[in-house]
Length: 506
Image 1 (cartoon, rainbow, N blue to C red):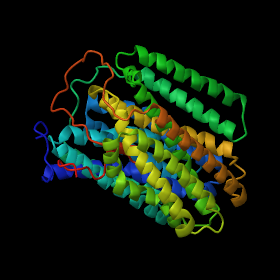
Image 2: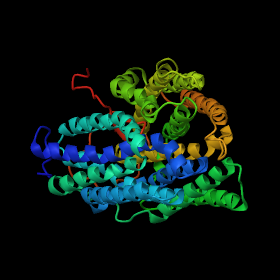
Image 3: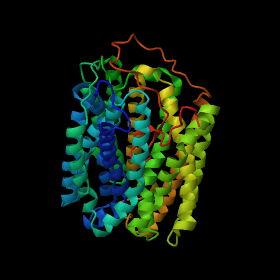
Image 4: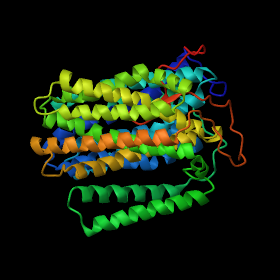
């Protein structure tokens, strides 16, 4: 059946869709609920703000460093196999998180959790793309995206409710979900692999990416906390050096994680610069807003977790329209206006203080931010893919996802320190509130800069005009259709628009 392709509406197709939705939902739920739990984690484990930063960054670091390798492993060794391994790994690491007696153990477990995420995240969409037949593939991935968005919407409420009981339940919740995913996957999901995949794996490039991002993250977090040591400066030099060598290795590798030909296109490079700026602002906001609502505004976890819920709702409802608009008028205007509108939303968040009202102060600001993000994300992802040759579409999406995750990683390491939120300050409402306002101004500046870069560098029309090397081998099976994509703001996955247009274009 797998050779002919699964069909929507059949029992086999529904089982595959259920498995991939639940698998990606694990990562999405984790991305939304952990931030809600941070204040309680800090109080229970008696840790400073640096500990909370590493609770977020340890996971993002391993995920960003290994996600490209995870996709390559699935293509070569079997997408279902690597997906299942990733789910089991993610569940065991979640158990370690839930049982962590101190912040050091929690951070280590979060790093292991990111490894599992890097294995299962690329596999969920790849299984659908490889398993479904023809036009049913577009319907399946659209359903996957829309149903996955529900997890992003439910996460804040579920996380807030669980945190009221214990923050450990946020992680332990993954265990029964993972058990269901593994059982269904082993029984109902067909195995697929890419027989034309490169024989080798870019292990040296992966190792350099891990060392480079780890060195930068550790050094910048340490320097931002005002406790700079000689080791932090050494880590900074090692991190920068490793990333420099990474570029040289990718230029010479026969099977690079990041095909250098992609960056021969000026628009592809510019779109990734915009991604870096926009997702840096997004990463800092998602960390700090939930803490601001709990520490300064005094909101309960459920209400604080719902602070960013409008972002998910607005993107689910309007991203397809944003993509359609960009198709009609070109991506330059939406990618210019969108980040600037989002910056306006951050400036409105300056009103969120000790006496803030969710309806009056939080909701309007978040809605403006969501409108700007919705204008930006679908055209940005389409621009990345449109600037790459068809044979590099998967690599282009993977690179852009990695850039987005690295942006959030570095922003969480740098922006709080620059804003003056240190270990002694985060539990003090006055000090944290002042740092939050500074961080908002930094984030707004990054977004405006992203809009200006788009205005100067993005073409009004896109075509895949990068000269490609001679193809190594023709892919086996039907070619994958180009489907308009958007990126989930919580998990960072490039996914089809939640409500794709039908064949008539409506």
